[in-house]
Amino acid sequence: MSSTGDKVKGMANEAVGNVKQGVGKATDNDKLQVEGKIQEKKGEAQQEVGKAKDSLKKGVDKA
Image (cartoon, rainbow, N blue to C red; front, side, top):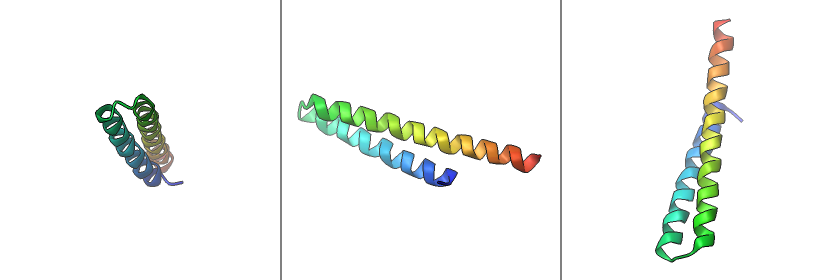
């Protein structure tokens, strides 16, 4: 997957995770809150992978 694709998927997962956390908190659903937190962290990790791919590409392009 491209770096842009990783970053977009990451942002989407992070957003959905935040929504799940909010709904879980509003409905006092601990399971949904935890699922949301996990999905948010997954999204953050995906974005970091995309950033790392960008950095590698820039390094290769300079070489």
